[in-house]
Structure formats: structure tokens, C-alpha cells
Length: 537
Image (cartoon, rainbow, N blue to C red; front, side, top):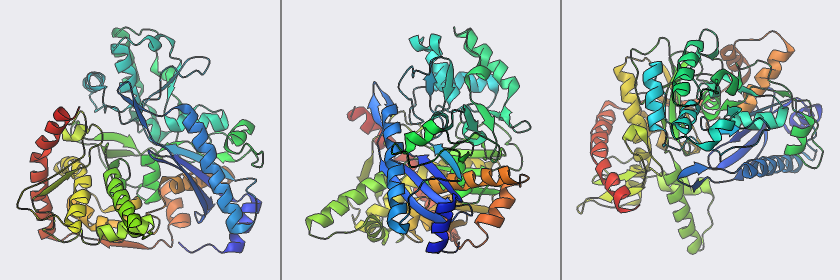
């Protein structure tokens, strides 16, 4: 992608020929302003964190509102600082957020219980019952599993549920007044029929029967769930109230075309240009997950595989791990603090580069195991998580070995799920990766290639993340509003990734074999973490 000239950026801002993408991630709310061709103009962000309340992970809605305003204010200040113009309009806008979870409201729009995020694993009974009844895998974190679990538990609020949505759907409604969800995010609420691009009607009827039989005969999923839209389809416009929510100063005008709100998985697919069959991507952040676009249905149901969709509605096999790179970030923070104690100031990127520099040395982590599980991890069979580092007395502890163990440990759970796809014969021509950990050139990319046993490609946009991917989807919606709707994959190739610079690393056979042996040791060592959960309640 060519670098945007300052004068061109200023002209795009003044003319409203821009797209604004906002993503509410697990630890950061990001805002990204781009041209309608995907060139980054400015960015802003706001740190936030989930909390464990009454045994469930949540964020208060006040923190959502405050975080949106803070991220947008940071973005607007970046525009003013870079280009000496005020951000008073945008041409298109879109919101993405952590997928799945449970936001339930009554008929007056009152939140009935605190937001239950994807991180919660209390829905095992409901997910199992739904999976058996529907004959598809319903993961613990899906919205329908949360709803059915509330019914099974006899929760008082169920009697007053009028609608259920995801975090992206909630914010989109705040900004536009429309109760709509992009098909990719909707596929984390309830299974999608790929022929219609809407919730599967037959499965809705079966699930309704299950929920009614559990004591909630007044609920009908078709009435509770948001309307579904594919990428590019009309999803409303930024309202006056929505503009004031983002910018209380009144500078930002309403009227921007809004793209369907999406989940972070969908924006990751767009950010890596992995939306066609036999392509896939890995998104590494607080969670880590892979998305592989299928050319045919899987042969059977697997607990570790979700069937979701691309933003265009094509079926995708998703391996979702609740725990990703957070523990690596914690260690980076410790070493940055240590550097400050010595009187040295270093940026986050500089710290990561220094830490990961020795992580490619094979054997550096011999006798060393690292587990990154801050929360439960269904694929690894963990109801709860305890970050653990364990080593044998004869092992050597070095910086390179420690970080090699951390990076390999952050990919290990994903490797377990990807083994299942390989056993199913799923073909992957191109696997792309994105997330901040890949900004350190070559290190995490090579270790991921070894973990997957397949070439991994990282593009120049790998560090841009989901907010950029959502801005691109918003720009696509604007393009579809202005002319006949082009195919998403074709539009991305022609308008966004035509000049994309990428690097591909293919693993060596010996390194793939070394990782397979490591994964066996790591899997056996999960007993250490289970013991830690018991010993450290």
C-alpha cells in the first residue's frame, strides 16, 4: 500500500471522503480513520479492562460509552495534530467488537444483567444440549448458549428479555438507531444458513422448542435476535445522537453511511484479505483464533471447531482460543519496568524486539513449559486458567528460552484445534496472520508457521488490526451505496490490497517435527496447570 501524501489526506478529511472504523477489543478500544481506498490517515485509542464480578467476566456499559468517546477524541486530536484540520465529518463508519457473549435488554432498553463476555465458560450444560439438538457445535461463548443457560438456571431476568445482541450490535444501535448485525458477528449468536445469509430457520424452531421445554415458553429467538446483513448491505447512517455520543463537542456531523457491525473475527479476515475458499488467517490478541474459509462442509461435528461465516456470508471453520498474547504482553511490561529501573526508556516495540530476538533458537526452551491461560480454555479442557511457567531442574533459563516458551505456549492451544481441521482434510492455500505480536519481523510468524505446519504470510497491514479492517468494510458499504455492489473479495483485491507488500515464511520439516514433539510435552504438562487451579483458587 502506497504512503498517503499529506495534501491528499487533508483533502479527503475536508471532503468527508473517509471511513472511520472502531473496534472494541478486550484491552483497547481503537479508532482508525482511512481514505475510501484504505490508506490510514489517523488513529486513536483508549485502554480498558474486563472485571470478574460474581464469577463472570464483564465490562460496564458506562465504560463502553466513555471508551468510545475517549478513543474518538484521541483520533480527532491525531487528525488535528497531523493535518491542522478539524474532523467534522466522515463518509462511512463501522463498528466491530469482541464476538459472542450476551447483552440482554427489556422492552424499554434496560440492560437486565451485566454484559457477559465471550470469556465466560459457565454455559457448558446449555451448549451441550443445543449442540445435540441442532447437530452442530454450539460453543460455550455463543449468545444462544448464554440465553439457554440463563433459562436452565431459572434466572429472574429471563421473564423480561425482549432482545439480545452482541457488543458490536449494541454500539451500532447507539450510533445509528438500527438493530442490525453483520452476518459474521451474527454467526456467533446462532447458526447461519449459507443459502439465505440469515439465521437457520429450521434450527431456530428446534432451539425454540428446547428453550420452551426448559421453562421459557414466551421466548422466540427470531424476535430476540438482531436483523442480519451481509457486508456492503445498508445498515443505517450515523444519527445525530450517535455523532454526539462520539463527539460531545458537536463538531462531528451526522449522516455517514454505516456498514453492518461485525465481530473481531470478521475484521481480521478483511484485514488479512482472507475471505475466499482455501484461505485462512490467524488473529493474535487477547484471544487467538484461526479462520479458514471452507470449500465444502466438514464431515462431522467437532467441539473445538465453530462454523461461522465471513462478512460476506461464506462458511468458515473457526478455532477460537480464549487466551492469546496477553501473557507475553505482561512479561514485556515487566521487562520495560526493569529497563526504567536502570534508567533506560524504551518503546513497546523496542521491548518486544529485544525480548523476541532469541526466541527462534531451537532448544532454548528445552525443559521449559509456559501456559498463557488467564481464563478457562475449552479446547485444552480447562474450566479455569492459571498462567504457569515450569521447568526441570536441569534446564537453562535464558531470555531467549523464556520468550520462546511464551510464544510457543500462546500458539499451542490453537495447534490442537488445527490438528482437527487437518484430520478433516481441509485444504489451505494461504494462511495469513495479523496482530501486534507480528510487528516484530519474522519471529512470531516463523513460530506460528511451525505450529501450523504451513506457510504463514504477514502483510504490511498486519499491525493495523480490526479497527482498520472495520474501516475497510465501512468503505466497502459506501462503495456499494454509490454503485452496483461488487463482490467483496474482488473489491478488496482491486481497491485495498493491489499494492500490498507481504512476506511469507514456510516452515522446515525438522521444525514442524520439533513442534509436534513439543506439543505432546505441552499437552501432558496441562496437568501442572490443573493442579495450579486447585492449589490457587
